[in-house]
Length: 222
Image 1: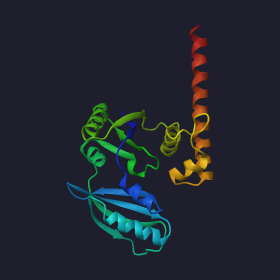
Image 2: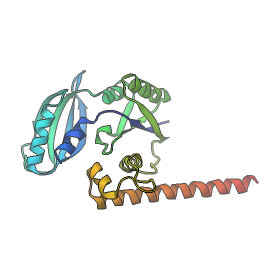
Image 3: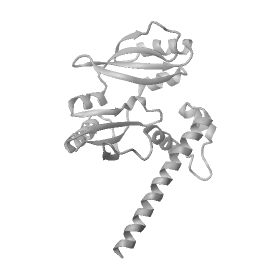
């Protein structure tokens, strides 16, 4: 049976670091294997032309980047750039095993990367985690479900909730304000508030449904 897994992956996300340091947004729109040791990434950078230009210069200088090709319309936003890089370790694992990426880990926006992928053989999931840990990339299984089952919350919501908990947003009293958290995540306070409310609502709905189901089972067996 085809299943999906969500792994919490502790690895560097240099593309996101460059994007944040230059005040632009970044998304991996597509990827393709180019050779045995390299691959191409189609990145979409959003922001002002000047900021995008400075980010592209920084990407060219990143370790492991072999070539960068910019789109003809450099003043458009988002701007598309094609980057040839040495195959990242996470992508090596995906390439070597029978897995299919459902959500690119390099699109993670929080402090922790999350990788959602599809697989058929349970051994591939175990091997993926073992290979990553052997490469010095600690991982933890966050979710395991059938391929067609909708996650309780989206990966982005999980990233935001995870960062909020680590920064003490849910402590009493709070160790970080909504505005400070939004700055750390690189989003507007209103956007962050909407993400948190939506995630919290879906978590509470899922918990309520689970509790109702549990009570129903208890009534049935007693």
